[in-house]
Length: 133
Image 1 (cartoon, one colour):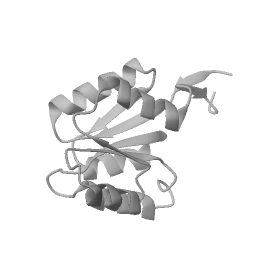
Image 2 (cartoon, helix red, strand yellow):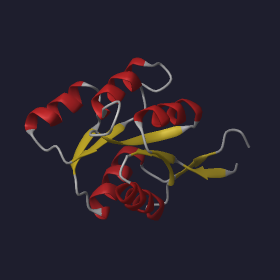
Image 3 (spheres, helix red, strand yellow):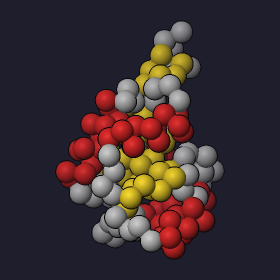
Image 4 (cartoon, rainbow, N blue to C red):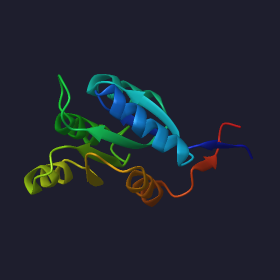
């Protein structure tokens, strides 16, 4: 049976942060797909077989907190683990993220090893059976 890399969706408006996180995801053996906005991210989450979402909280337009609520309200995306990455580090921000369905909260800047450890914790191996093959 063929195998494929598990997909991780990175939703981040800052180009440099999005690129660094995509590289960390790829180096951990997963496939990184990226979005610059909550709207673009939601469309990708509905279209792609995403196994985990890395979500920035402070974005123009729709915030990450709003995105969390939408993801967990939709039957198509509610079971996807969402790891919040944010410069907001207060206990109340972390609690708000958890109450809205976040699986984990990492404070920026996030180290590569820290990010990869969270990926492994939530996803295990980077490969999965390709049921379509």
